[in-house]
Image 1 (tube, helix red, strand yellow):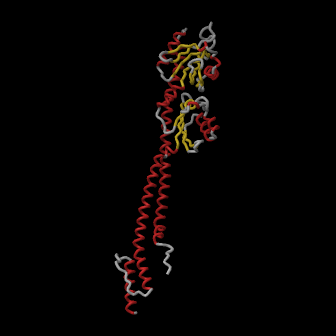
Image 2: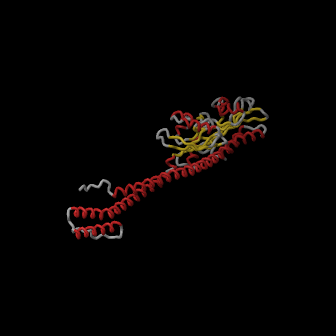
Image 3: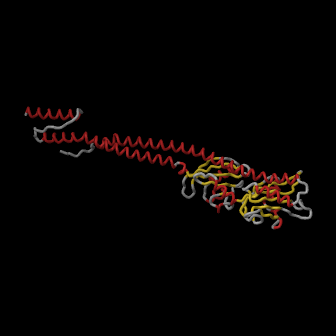
Length: 381
């Protein structure tokens, strides 16, 4: 007799119970992961927008104070008849003393506008190690050719320069806010306030940070602040997009230059990991404050939760598998015994009997019927 069983009950139970349970558990995990992922991204994007907007507003407040000082200088100088250079230096010192964010200030006059006998005069005061330093920018160069002077003169409106290294005044990396002195429709010069990018870097380091990193670009896309200091002044968001072949970054850069806010996805050029770029304008200087957050950081808690659920599912399936094995054994053991008794009966042994059959189930009834059949055979034979 062929004792080989092609499809044991154990495997049938696993196919009927175990695999459907695994499929259902997996489907629930996938659905739960996608729902949790969408919820986490939605919540984190809302937080990032609020975070960037709040910090952009904070920076905007700082830069608004900076832009107010040259405007105030213009009003004061215009209101004082025959103001002398000592008074101008004193006013510059007073303004510097009241604002830790500004490195230096100047009032650069048009040729012969301050003194008919002196072509150029540009009193400049900057912060030294323990006291203010007084300079006349006209002693070092013809400042009228500098961007911070010539561009606002041409535009006839305030202007923020791109980052540059100032070799004539502070000898530091800075950006300058220039306010044209226009009185009675006549141009008299430029009042300036210089922001040290070193000071800006220190200020940014003290700000609350995202889990990724933040940076600031100018009105032309030049990096004004970035954690990688070698990027400042040397790169723009457009040159980086070109360098790392991130075409979508160029479009995001155009949005920034238009003064828009947004949350946009992009792929890291090296790891190809998905990241999120969030940005908001600093309206007082037409700059943009930006933050970059890896999606893996956003989904860190979601992934940890799903990993726990997978672990629980694995152990749950192990327990169910053990229960199936035990159940199959409880079913198949009596059947195997009955099969052996049937083989003995087929060989002519009429003394076989199924013993110790517990329960009142179908297997018990089958055993009782088998014993009755053997007894009947023995009686008639």
